Image (cartoon, rainbow, N blue to C red):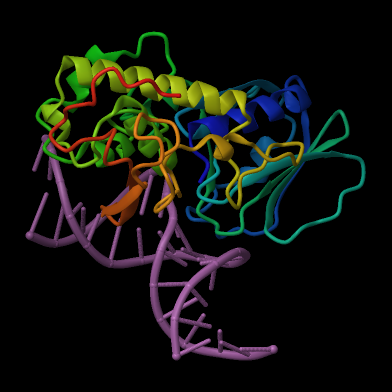
Length: 289
DNA sequence: CTTTCGTCCTGACTGC
DNA sequence: TGCAGTCAGGACGAAA
């Protein structure tokens, strides 16, 4: 479930607790996450000081003083929490780090879709998971032109293209649905058929919805929680995701239509049939609210 | 090259 | 009430 806004929320929550601190102890409580831990994972972490906590797409990247970078992926259900002093172990606590300031950082992941990796910082840009990633949709340089360029020649539906991390990084099912709604684009539209205006709208919508979600601390459905245990609240602002059969509430149809759902690539796509017309025509001049 | 599909996992939910 | 079945979904490798 964690998509870009949730991962960014976790990064922001984590950074003030751990930046500048030295890892004094590291323990793996459950070794079999989705991908095996790299060799000597814990031993390599101990003694290193945390320099920077970054994020790329859905990955948290922790640069360490020894020239290595710790990569954390939260998978579907992963969360990080911090505690000062004695801590009570919870079910699905898989990795525990102790820091020089007395803070404990715990990685918890019930579904074990997440993983961690550790590699030379100098090789980060060529890491298998990072090297092919598309642009960050909240980056200042991301616009309709670069989106259109990356969609060129793609016959796959735009909804599925948005989930492809090589085209745009960090988008998951929730924000793909919400951005398409906001841009007024039907999810089955062939990706490469979107014109300049539609790509401009979509780039703008992606950026806007992600920034609003970050400001709201992400979306908490079942799993996501912030580092301090708080839940995000962007889920209350969903226009379409998870709202099949409910009245469309923010576009011009004002409840005269209900949100529909269809399955694409095994995932649910939620959309308003009034705002998101098949064939790409958007209802002219529709205000959002 | 692009696209689809199966795989991993467990908790929450549905239906009988 | 209990239990089996279904769903959710990120990333990757294999297959088409």
